[in-house]
Image (cartoon, rainbow, N blue to C red; front, side, top):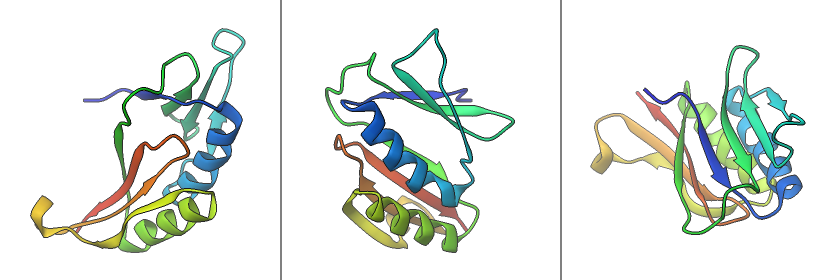
Length: 122
C-alpha cells in the first residue's frame, strides 16, 4: 500500500494553486505546511494528507500520479478544474479499455509537466 507520494515542483506557490483547484473535485480539502519542511505542501483530507509537492526534490523527469475518483462526474470535474488552474490537456475524460474494463480517466500536465490523472473504475 502507498502511504504518501511527494513530487518535486519548481514553483511551490504556482503548483499549490494548481493542485488546490485541480484536486478539490476529488475531495482533497486540506493543505498543510510546516516549519520543519518549509519547501513542502501536503494535500488530502482531515484524516490523511497523502499527496505532497516539494521544492526539496528536483523536478527532473515528469512523474505520473493517478488520483481515485468516485464517479465519472468527478473525473470530468477534475479535468475541468485542472485545465482552469492552468494545466495542459493530456487526454480528455473518457473510457480507456486498454487499461482495463470500466477504466474511465482524464489526464492533464501540471505546471512542471507531471502527468496527473483522475480515474474511476466503474
